[in-house]
Length: 164
Image 1 (cartoon, rainbow, N blue to C red):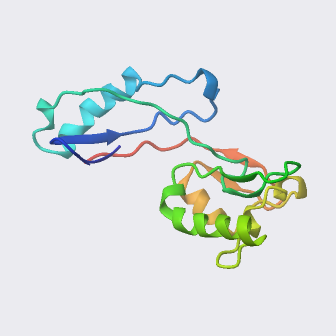
Image 2: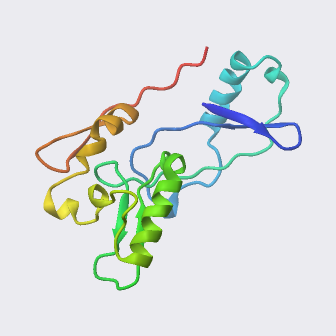
């Protein structure tokens, strides 16, 4: 669960249902009853006075993740003039400036010079070479582990956050 103040004396609260694979074309756009109930239970334990709060709505969305849990930052193979910055899951906003600079350089100059995009090339999957440089970080942050033999992503159960 995470939260932040929102304009109009509101609090924006979010959480995760931790579903590994979904069909984005058939994914519900509203917050599930289970998530709303979990937030209603945990939020007052986190912030005094939230037991009187009223939920005004809810939205849902999916993370975009590649097979190895790393970004894909590259030209789209086989499509001239199309570039891909995807698979950023929930961490993309944290390094968006570096991604933006690298992609802008790739598009305008033919290669990124300020940041190294090579570990995030689209061809790494066909090569059997996952983005190992971030494997420890990804394994720590997510439910899987990187395997040096290839690009296999082995799911593990994700632990739910504990709210105190």
